[in-house]
Every structure is written in C-alpha cells, then in structure tokens.
Image 1: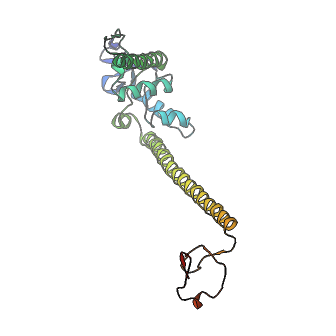
Image 2: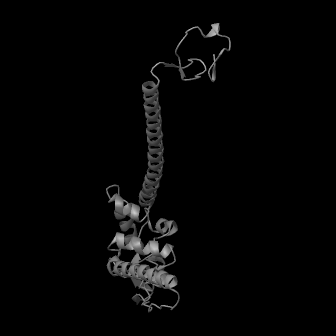
Image 3: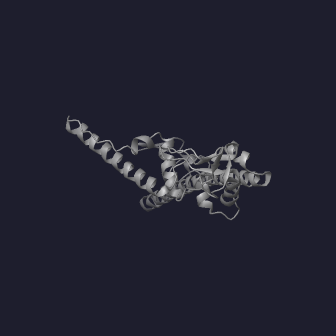
Length: 245
C-alpha cells in the first residue's frame, strides 16, 4: 500500500488536493490489497450529502444498503458483487490466480470436481471483471466515521437514507408474504372448485345410472334406487330377494 503525500504534518486530500491535518482525514478500507484513498472531512461531508440525497438513484442506494462508500467507487453494481463475495469469505480466494488442480479418481468424483472447478472459474471471472470496473473495492464507512465527518443536517440525511432502505426491505418482505398467502388462497380455491366439479360429475353419473334414486336429506344416506311400493313402513323388514325392506 502506498503512502499518502505528507507535507509538514499535513496530508493531501485526493479529491480537493488541499492539505489538511492527519486528524482531519478519512481513509477508506479496501476489501483486498488495493491502495487506500485519502480525503478530508469536508469532502467526505459533501459526498454524504450527494449519495444520501432524496433524489439519489434508489436502486444504487439499496445496493449499498444506504451506506456511504469511497468516492472513488465508479460502479456500484460491481462493488456489490465484490462485497457479496467478501461477505461469503470468497473474495481473497477468487482474486488469486492459483492454478486449478484435478485429482484422478472415480468418474463420479471427477465429474463433481469438474463442476466445482467450472463454478470456481466462473466466480473468478466475475470477481476479476468487477474488480476491474469497480474503481475502489472498499468497505462501507461505519456510522461513527460518517458522524465524525458530517454536521447534524448531513448525518440526518444519512440516517434517513438508511431508514428508506430498511423500510423498502420490510415492504418487500411483507409483500412477499402477502403474495404467498394469495397464492395459497388461489390454490385452495382451485382445489375446492376441482373437488366440487368432481362431486358434480359424480352426481350426474349417478343420476344417469339411477334416474329414480333418492337420498335422505337429513342423514345423506343413499342413494337408494326407489322402485315398487312407495310405503316403506308397510313392509316392516320384509325380505325381497337379497334385500330387506
């Protein structure tokens, strides 16, 4: 990592090129071994106002979770890719161009190794492309750092930006739950319609096969193919063939 320009106990801001005291500078922390960028608190405060404004691109704000990044970050999408790899503890491995090794073994193990190597090489290509376009693969600045460099108004803008992202995440989660409930209701309604349709078709088939059949409206006993004498009480258990009336 290179050393910043120092002159009589001051350091040069990489944004405004003004010299400021060492206690009034901010340094970004790279996720990899890249060079850190140094700038003064005044430039940091201006950048917070810029990236946390109400009219800032909301997709970009969500990708960085409302946090403030180094001003030298050029592509937030590429930065998000590197940051996700960093959170998964993969970044340092992916940016190292180590040769892939293949162990000989049974065909199943060989296929699994080939697949893992393929996925690793894909992630390496994605990481290197993101590293080339990101500008500065830095960690987000902490709340404490932002608070030290900003006024009350600017820090309030920062906290509102964080809250906007949290509210959006809560809304998206709630919307997903509502859509899941709606889908379950639709499936239940469809299942009920199919069940009712099957019952209706079955009833039509019974009516076609037994047009004179009757069923008790109270206990749902039946259907009974009612024929012959209509006074069932008059027979008192009389046997007619295999049946009893």
